[in-house]
Each structure stands twice: as C-alpha cells, then as structure tokens.
Length: 287
Image (cartoon, rainbow, N blue to C red):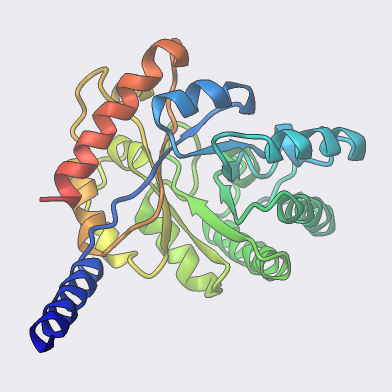
C-alpha cells in the first residue's frame, strides 16, 4: 500500500513539474475584416484585429450601427482581440492645430465601445494623426504627443483598455519610426495602460535590429509581422522572422503575434501564411 501511495505522489509531482515547464508559444492572429471570420477559423487563426474606424469610431458608426457590430462581435468564431487605425488622420495630436478636447472626446467613445465589446487592447499607429506638419519643431511635437498620450492613458485605465503604441516606418509617417523611438515615448508617458506594439515589418523597413526588443521588454504587449518586400504575408518571399522571434523569446514574450500585410487574396494565401509563421514561431519557442 505504501508503495502505491509513493508511486502516486511521485506521479503527481512529475505532472506538476511538467506543467510548470510547459512551453507557451504565442498565438497567431490576423488583421482582417470581421466578415472573413469563418475562413480564418478554418485556417487556424486564433483571434482577429479589426479597424477602429469601421467598428467603434463615433464619426463613422452610429449608436444603432454599433449595436449591430456588437452582435457580430459576439457571434465571431475567431474572437476580436484588438483594433487598430485608432485616430483619424485629420484629428491631429501634434502640430500647430490640435484640438485636445475633440481628441479626448473621440477617444473616450472608442474606449467605451471597446469595453462594451469585451476588447482589451487598442493599437495606436495612426500615422496621419501623429505625423509632424512640415516645418513644425520635432521636439515640440514629441512634447505634445507625450502630453496627449498621458491623457489618453488615463482614459484607457478608466475603461480597462491597454493602448499599444506602434512603430511606423518613415515611408508611412515622419514620427516614431522605430521601436526605440516608441520606447522613448512609452518611458516618458510612464503609465501601465500605455504599452508597445513591436511591429517587425516596420523594424525591417527601418533596418532596426532585434536587440532593441530586449530594451523594450517592460513595455511590449503585442507584435505584428509582414515581409519587408511589398508588405507581403509570410511565405511569399520566405522572409526569416526568427531573429526577431528569438529576441521576443529571450524576453519571455508570450503574447499574440498578428499578420498585418497586403493580401492578393486572403482566401488563397491565408492558410500558407499561417503555416509558415506557425513553423517559425514553433522552431524558436520549442527548440
């Protein structure tokens, strides 16, 4: 009897140790329209990222229309994890014409709707909104951005939303082009609800090496990828993301990784993109 009890205890102990050492690999999602939910589910994607402008924006979506989207979100097979395209381009957050109250009123409606929908994250790229007007002082622009970001972070905390600032390459925006620059902003904002999206495509475009990921360890909560040439999905040009994935693993990143790319046809390319990225992630995280 004692031997049986001892064997059981050893087995339980073994299972406990094994569970503690279970490898958790990042889930793969897609920046895509809600309407493609069933196709993405069949391909294996685990979550969606959709457009703020199409779902939550008070400028584009009435209260009644939002209720329709809310039902669509609840019925998704692939859950909605986050939204991007946060602030419209004409609602400037830097420059000589900034309407702070208009920005904050808009943002609060977005956050309120996001919370109702069960969303936890908004990705802040919004190159048009944050782009520095010609001739405007860059230091002043940075000061303005940090100021409004602090205000937005307070609202994000109120609605239990994490804002993830995204680095955008210099062909798309003239401000916060690298993860290092985004890190400087996050450090200055210094708020738990203001974090970073490490976009590998934009890092590749700016020839930014993976080592900055280690410096941003405290702030990275989300990651996006696409191939450098043509912003194509994984597998078109056989882009090797593993140096960046390895850097993420070294900081013990276990968050989501999304494909945000230019599709020729997501129905035709979506499965292979998932398969290629899944293999690269597994090769890094499981070996």
